[in-house]
Length: 105
Image (tube, rainbow, N blue to C red; front, side, top):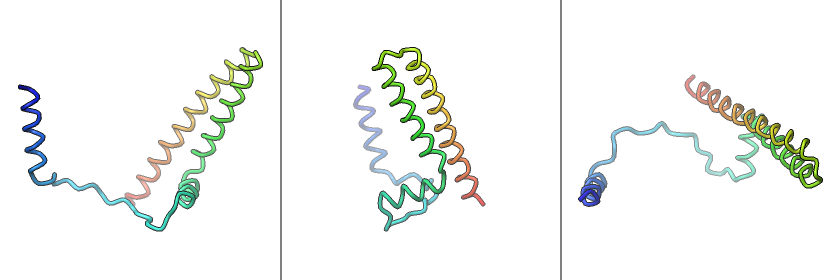
């Protein structure tokens, strides 16, 4: 059966040697806690936390406008939230590219 073949392949892979390709080692910071890591990452790419803060602020203001019955302003804020999320995502991707380029040098 198909399930039996899948099990046999899985067992054969588990019994064999590990794959020859090893990923490049990442820098480790063994003494680093959450706060230290957060501060280090914020210094490396300050636009990401700023974008997250803007996105949350716009979202909260949009929800407040919705509760007050101002649907036009609420819709505008939800559209602005999507734009802020896109900018945050672009900042994350840009930071990843910059970090990758820096590590290659």
